[in-house]
Every structure is written in structure tokens, then in C-alpha cells.
Image 1 (cartoon, rainbow, N blue to C red):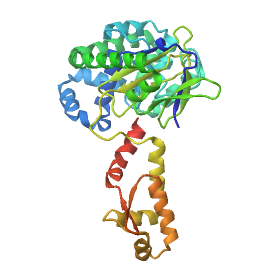
Image 2 (cartoon, rainbow, N blue to C red; image 1 turned 180 degrees about the vertical axis):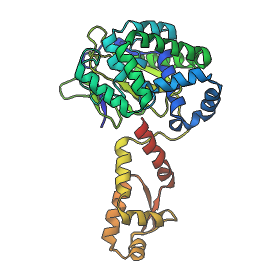
Image 3 (cartoon, rainbow, N blue to C red; image 1 turned 120 degrees about the vertical axis):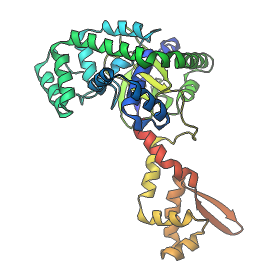
Image 4 (cartoon, rainbow, N blue to C red; image 1 turned 90 degrees about the horizontal axis):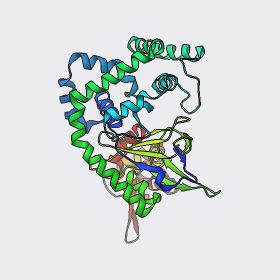
Length: 367
């Protein structure tokens, strides 16, 4: 599966790389609420969490459905501003119906890719949102009721929450990482100008690529388990695509593609010093190759040293052709190495690839 952004006919200057304070704050808040996703940030999470005042920590828990399991589109601005205040001012211009619908799109809806009426004006949608919020606990149910009954008051509360985060910890973070993110955005913009989008996307993330369609169109492919489709002209008043770098994001690669919103991609600029992750298709192929019990047994022997097909057949009591079929499946998945020694062909498990399989899988499902 993949997310697809149709950019057919889009001028290159409408593809924008820009840092965003609000998006980076959203990434930082997600790391605080889901530290297991970000083991490399353990020290920062521990220090920041322990330094939060009780009142701020409680308010963050109250609103964390906006960034815990996924990121609300409200936190991925299509037109990033220079400061957090600028972006919060822009957020204030979103009308109540759209704001409330976007706030609930992640945690209280199963129809992200379809236009649905706002719960502020549709009784059936309002009842469904309340039911789904209640299933997530009393804290989110209370927050949902406040947003449905007093959206203006809740928006003021949410803005003050973000401003307090800036004062407590995010201001220092942005002064430190904002320069790095701006430099990355400038580099990608220059790369786009000189080399084109086909080279810029893979340089931005190994999960991004450009694909031509049979009818002469072009589309950006985002390699993720979740599927979705949108167009760079989704927002008729502001066509284009925005790509936002983040220093807190790895292993996540976020894409906002709700109907009527300009597509936004948030990509990590830093990751652990590991080999490039395998594609989701290759991870699936490797897991499928290992699902057969005989192949698991063969891997046990092949992990201890090189073996010929005949040796494996004798060890496990199966025919050489059967061994060859299993070896072929493992080799196609890139799990074993084969070399010739005289008239013998030796097979051995690629331990580095197998060691990476767990992290490849985890990165794939978290991406």
C-alpha cells in the first residue's frame, strides 16, 4: 500500500520545502506521549517530562489525542510561518466547523479520506464522535464535549496550551533545531531547482518517489502501510505540496491528505546510523519467506555456517529439489548469501539483513 499525491500539471515552484514551528511542536509532543516510538530521544523525553509543571502536564494529557496515535492536520500547516505565534494566528482563521472536524479526524473518525459533515452542524456525526470519544476514556470524552459545546473557548484554551509549551521547553528547542531545519529546507529547495523532483524526493526520504502515469501524469508515492490518494489541487485556493522537515520525527513520515486540504508531508532529517530501511514490499516478502517452518529450520543451520544443498537435504530428510525451492525463496527475499567453492555451491544466512528485519518491520509500521 502507499499514499499517492497527484501532481500532474503542478509547476515546480508550487512544491515548497519549509520548516514549521507548529509541526515541530507536534512532533515533540508526540515523542513525549509515545517515547517507545523514539528510543533515541529517551534522554530528552525523561528530562523534559520531569521538568514540566503539574498543571501543564495535566493539560497535555487532556489534549494528547491530537498528537499521540497520529498527528492532527491542524498541526501540519500547509503554509508554515516564521514563528509559532504566526502559525497560531493562521490556525485562528480556520472556521469552527473545519477546525472541529480536523481535531477529531484522527481519533474519532474512520472516514479520513472522505468528506464528512462537521459534528458542529450534523447531529448524527456529533453523536458518532461522542460515542468514539467515550470509548477512549472519560478524559477525551470531556474534551470532546467541551469542543462541541464551546469551540471558541476550547480554541483559546488550546492556543494557550501551545504558548505555555513554547515558554516551558519548546522555545529552547526551536532556537536549537530551527536553524538546522531551515538549512535542510534550503538544501532541498536548491536540489529541486537543479536536479528536479525525481532526485529530490529520494534524497528527502527513501519512502518518497516520483512515478509517471501512462496518461503522461505524475504522482508522488509515499511508501506507507496506510493507503490514501489526494491531489496537489485539493485546495483550489492554494494548490501545491508542502514538505516540512523535523528533527523529532524518525521513524515517522507523516502525510496530510484530507479532502479539501493542501497535501503536507513531514519528513525526518535525522535517523539512527543504520543502513537504509527496506521497502515495505521487501519486508513483507522476507516475513513471508520465513513463515514456512522448514525454512526456519534451514535458517538455523545456515546461521551457523555455509551449507550445500545436499548437506541440508541429508540433515532434514527432504529431497535436494525441495531444499532448492526453499533456498530460492530465501534468496529472493535477500536473506541468504550464496557463493561457489569449486564444484560446490554454499549457502549462508545473511546475519546483518536478519538482524535488521525487526527494525525494518518496526519502522515500516510506525512510518
